[in-house]
Length: 66
Image (tube, rainbow, N blue to C red; front, side, top):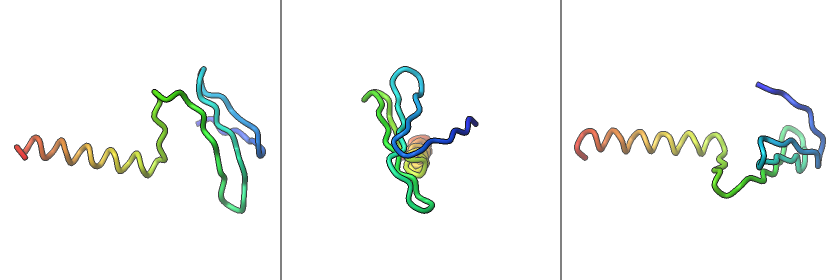
């Protein structure tokens, strides 16, 4: 894992089309902004986990004939 230190309004670039900017820091919360092409999905980790769980349940139901 690459670990970087950024201040408010500083950014990092990922590849050719993704920019992550620190918008604000308040206590233990960091607000970030992500600019990415529309064809690249961006999810919070907990949302991605839920999507994966739902996909696995759908696959299991289909395998069971349901």
